[in-house]
Image (cartoon, rainbow, N blue to C red; front, side, top):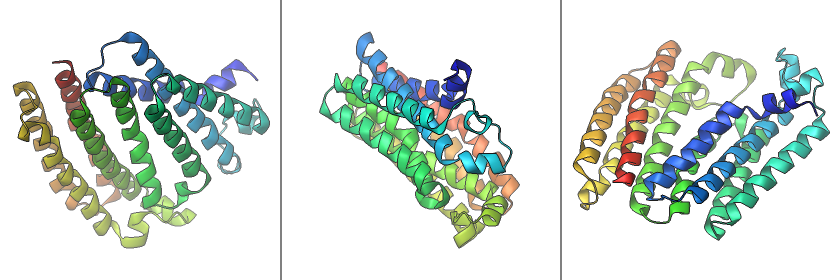
Length: 277
């Protein structure tokens, strides 16, 4: 195996983001010790790398047909070598999860299984694939919170709102890609039900996330900082949801998908700081 090809196929930037998401969940859950945070980061990084390799294995023919010169297409890695790399990454991710107990091992195993299922079958199944991607975005936060084992309420809220807004963004992405998906036979929600229905569901998911974010305040578990951060993020989300509900142009969906990153970042910072207070 060529080291450069290994680095390219695991997409380390993506893996780094997943590892940092685990740490964010750990801090939100009240964790403070460096070793559990490091092990959580390694699990997130390794399982994410596994998912990237598995994706390239299943996509090797499609990548070749589309002229995407990925390592498997170029021959820098064989499919057999890629499978061995995927197995090693999965084993490393699961091994580093064992130290935190059976619950974290189970979540790590589910994360890995979802990655395989998505690449093997669900990528072309529209909404089901969107749900798996959204879960993959939210699960690292849950995993980090389980390692901490303290502030379960805040971690649950973080996981739930991340999943709902992540699913909304994935549906927006499918609206932006509707022409290509239709041409290649992908049964995305806008292809099957129309752009209007997909936009309506995407907007509804954002709206549903807003009251969930206020649960800690309702039970007296949120600070003034949390109230301010959640209120700013919620206002931005609701304004974007109104725009999403009116989307009929795929290009507009792409713009709104990017715009959602701002309140998502505000929400993430709010959760982490609240966990540290």
